[in-house]
Length: 303
Length: 235
Image (cartoon, rainbow over all chains, first blue to last red; front, side, top):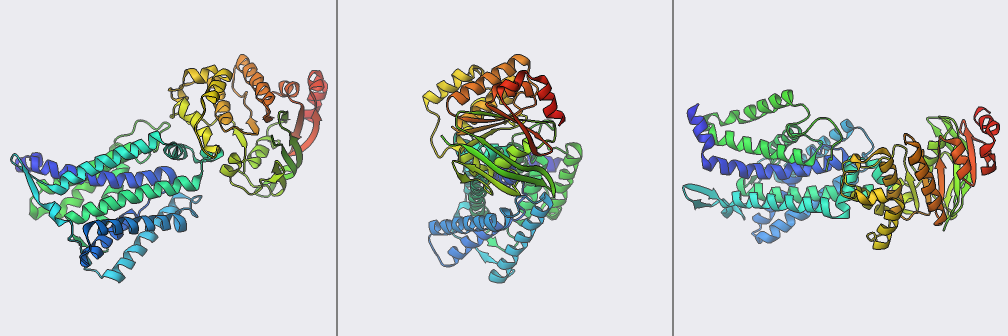
């Protein structure tokens, strides 16, 4: 047990856990933002990331420059996000949460099946950015460049998003629509524009996550990012789904805890990692069903 | 300025008629009242104008263009603003943010200094508490903010759903005198109210609804005629 604690407190493990937490936080924002504005839990979010990762692998296969690969990744993820919003989310906007959830399940498995048909179960490899896995030494700690990139990128994305929500009129419209969509529409807020913008922002974040995850896990298969998405969904619920901030913190926390447990568990026991994490999720939900980071059940700002 | 016209409006909820054959006009700069017992169809009429419930027959026209079948945001953008029952402010947003949401109905642009000045003149309290969360205001202050928010949209027609509900008498005085000022600026006002006598005294015409039908129309001269008012409700 003391070995476990020592390993968990190890600076190296801490830094890696924060890096993973940062990526999960971005995914949580993508899921939380769309939930706030559209009341829709987008289970297909992971498949957007998977599609972006395949775009990177596709470009890397053809030895295209890194910039072109990243641009293709963004283009694929954003086009898919827009298509999802137009074809599935928007027509189902007035349906119950259960109908919308099942619809996103269907989209998720559809995209996964298409990836399986096109790329096969073994997938492809995205190698163009792997040099970011090289470590830089800071004192006794070796920090991989991608960890620094992940933390900085997540921080920049979050600051930009907060600025957009608080300082622009479309941000104000999104917050209003998240609180009370009908009243917002009565004031002239365009529901379609607001949902398109939130889906696009979530798409940008999915593309960013796709780039960062493929650096760490260059083998892209049809189930790429699936487990991460399930973890983040759990994190979002644990943090408190009804507020963007608490959902983001929940995403970060579950990434951090996964990183910590992954670093501290002896490698012979690493297959137990999901059991540990989800055991913790159940415990937190039993103790704080409204979310770890929410206060009471009163009126809350969802975006 | 454009006028609002309802022509033989019919609204039904699940086959049950809520508004039947209602026709009325609100011209620029005029206050029109709509009173009647609970369930008479007053709020439903406002909801139908705003596109929240579909009209099953008849027409709703603004400046002689039909609004039927258009979504609420398009109707708000065409120049009709609603102050909803219960005010429906965004309690956790600031007073300023609530006001700026009123701009959503305008094609573009921010509030000019003149407009802020004008709102401050009409509603000093709203100006004073601009950075507070709207939920921290008193009921009367919230009602003023709700009306101010609707005016920021620069509507040609203002609809109000029971603005005096739950307010202290002196605040009701303030709200009613504000409505007069608003109408004097050329905005047409359609006022749904429970306070029948005050509404009849204020409005150029007050229509009495019962069971979704227009029963009679009263003028300010009828405000003192208690028998006629009571008869209007009991008819």
